[in-house]
Image (cartoon, rainbow over all chains, first blue to last red; front, top):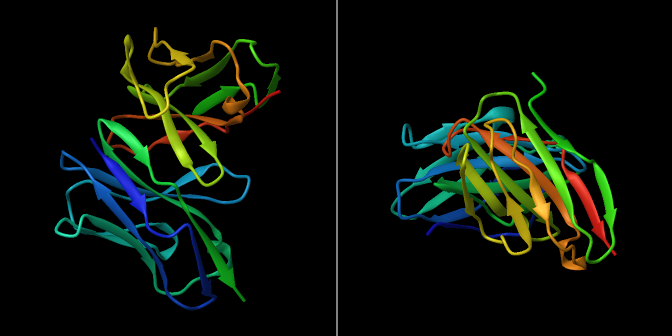
Length: 110
Length: 112
């Protein structure tokens, strides 16, 4: 069985400061891992994905994530937050079934 | 390419009514899935399919049926709607289970 846990339901950061959204996963297989973003009243967009190549994955809009097998984590980071980053972010694990985390809502303070 | 299409966009049902949410994709993707999105719950997998003729249950399958007679279409049936099924429903497709998923625009369903 596989599962994914997003450790924070809400994160607030000031514009220009780093962003860290935390995700832990559990999987019987070697998983594929994803981060998706959903802006208010919009659809879901893929930010980045890990599929057993490099452990540091770069995505769109300056986001990146590091796969750490020993910690079963796949945290999402960005060096400097922009107002446009305010959205809900979902960590996703795939190994047969595709399972979403409950989401982290990112608030950007001016 | 239209991508993933869903109909209807909005629907109001009375308790006990049945209906089918339609989903179609024109990308020849094998993997298709249905999710429901509720506040604070993320997207929960209802049913998924790895190819025509093959379906399986997700995390929250009760009250929903699916079938996959063609690669393109993956309808979701609500047999007897309940207020607990009020939600936003998303259909998604991908080439494989490890590929990027493409999402439809969603169906907002209200059951009164």
